[in-house]
Length: 178
Image (cartoon, rainbow, N blue to C red):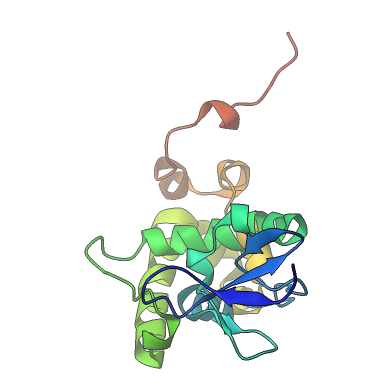
């Protein structure tokens, strides 16, 4: 199958793409934009993007990794999700982000970005602002996602950053040869 079909979800403005005999959240030629800064990534996280046929690809926060081709899934899970999920954790619990990216306006993008950035600055990786504050706006979303990994915070973070880390999971423990 090639092309696309409208999603079955009631009231959904998004398309499910069909190719390789499967349904996908992105078209077959989709690639994440390269070297996107955190601000633009946040906009895509909330709003999505349009494909070459002017169909709206859902907000990136609504992408399901299982419905992404393998190469796209890998980039999404390693270069986009880590920092953007962490930023979203910093939003008030009662805040409902619109499911339709078209309902997100510039003021919502800006205000939530500021709140989410403050969360990173105070609860996740404050050491970065202490050491590299003037460079942070130039970092790509991929650099951010790599930098906020637990191992980096344990190695470079200050006591505040380390104390705010979630409890270790079994998969976080170093595997030592015995």
